[in-house]
Image (cartoon, rainbow, N blue to C red; front, side):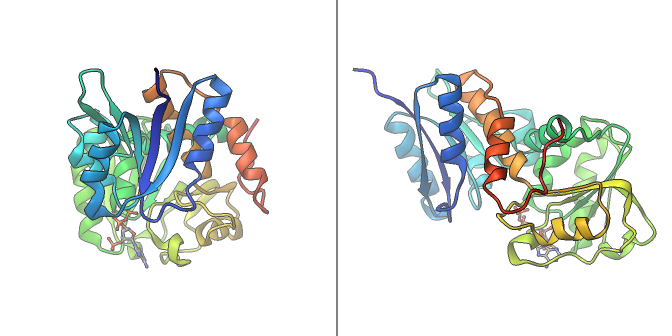
Length: 284
Ligand code: ATR
């Protein structure tokens, strides 16, 4: 008897996760037979929950807040991008029984920007707001695109400076505080702080966005986030949230597990169409 391949997303909270739906659509689209569920796992139960999942025939896991650092520590082997980001959002059972940890968030962001929105990162001036785990996960994949420079601005300045130092051998990257942003302009602003979740906004000078500049919030919501609204109010060429990144990081995980690349645009368009606002429209 062959049992169906099982996958899941672990997180806390997890009730509103769109991942089971996204992976189900990917599976139907590519003719893959699998099951994907969501499981609420608090941090203190992470190790035992993962061990149980794989012991019972699980093939792969996604891990979200607050479990990405724990997943990083759990993995037997890690990809280079996971190693650098010190966080893992995808675990995969390898044929030798060991567990591979990867981080598909950064490549998910880069793919959404470049493939879905035709935004060029090469040669551009990029500002990343925040110096926590979400920022760390996206820096290396962005630097691979050879931007002119990345600036990380953070409330706690030391964290921004130290994070920039960690990546300085991979490209032009510096750290600073929000007050150092006066009279500076950027082509792309990425909000990687956790402020959207609480409806707040870091203090931003009004002239921060260059002409045709783009805003991107790593968070997503059924309503425009405060940062997306800030972009719209400040004449951003596009002001996007992280829904496309969510679908793209899922597609990358699906590829790691199944060796097949699903089509992401129809899924992003479907999830977008279910929202009241149409600010994430893809570039054709
Ligand atoms: P995540 O894993 O989502 O990145 P994190 O590692 O806790 O979460 O990092 C949260 C980020 O949001 C940090 O950069 C944090 O700034 P500090 O390092 O100064 O704490 C930032 N952040 C959270 N609340 C903020 C606020 N009200 N204003 C500005 N930045 C905020």
